[in-house]
Amino acid sequence: MNLRARHVAPTALAALIGCFAFAAAQAADVQVAVAANFTAPIQAIASGFEKDTGHTLIAAYGATGQFYTQIKNGAPFEVLLAADDTTPEKLEKEGDSVPGTRFTYAIGTLALWSAKDGYINDTDKVLKDNQFKHLSIANPKAAPYGLAATQVLEKLGLSEKVKDKIVEGQNITQAYQFVSTGNAELGFVALSQIYKDGTLTSGSAWIIPDSLHDPIKQDALILKKGENNPAAKALVEYLKGPKAAAIIKSYGYQL
Image (tube, rainbow, N blue to C red; front, side, top):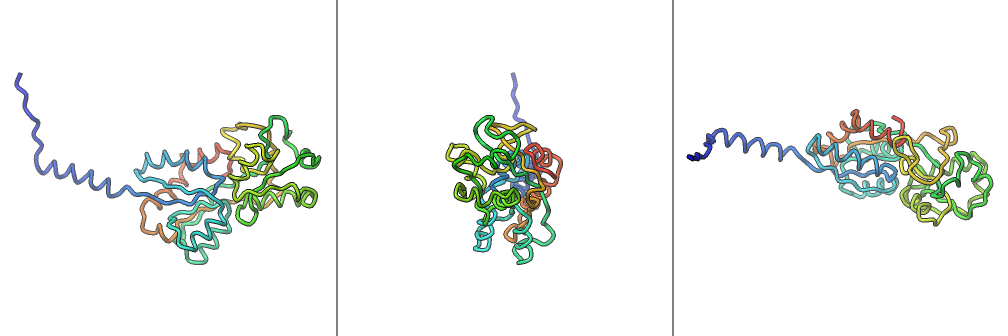
C-alpha cells in the first residue's frame, strides 16, 4: 500500500498557526474580588464563562469591607463583585473604577439557619424564645449581610437580649462555618449558602422578610487595574447574560 504524506501549503500552514496564536493572545486571566456570599454561584458561573469566552476567572473570596481596604492599598483585583452597592459606589466616586461599568448583578436574601433539622420552623420564634447559647453573624462593619442581621435584631427588639450570645465571623463564610460546625446553634447566613434550585440543602431555616432590613443590592464594577483587560469586560458582560442569570437565580438571589 502506497502511503503519501498530506502536503500543507506554507501559506495555509502560516494562516493556521496565526489563528492559534491570535486565539491564545486573546485569552486572558481576570482577577476578581468576590463577596463571600457569592462563592458557590461564581464557581458555577466560572466554568461556563471560561468555556464560552476562553478567559480564565481567578477569584478571591472575602468581606466587601476588607476588599475595599485591599483595593485602596493596591491589590491586583480587576473586577469587584461586592455584597453591597455602597462600596462600589464609593470606589467609583473615588476614581478607582472604570466609569460606567457599575451595575447590580444580584439582590441577596438573608436567612436564619441551623444545621439541625427542625430547630428553626420558618419563623422568628427560635430567636424570640432565646434558648440558644450562641448566635452567629458576620462582622457588620465589613460584611453587608452582617449589617442586615443587626437590622433584623433591631427591628425585632432583640438586640440587647441577644448581644452577649453573638459570635462574629470575619465574613459570611465564617458565620456559616460557626453554625455548620456546631459552635453556634444558629446564625444569620446568605440564603445562597444553604439553598439550591428551590430546596434547602441542609438543616432548617427562616428566610428573613425583606421588610426587616435594607435591601442587599450587590453591585459589580471593573476596577482601574482591569481597564485594559478584555477578560474583565467579558466577565461583566457574561454576568448580565442569561446563562449567569439562571445560575444566580438558582441560588435564591433576585435579579
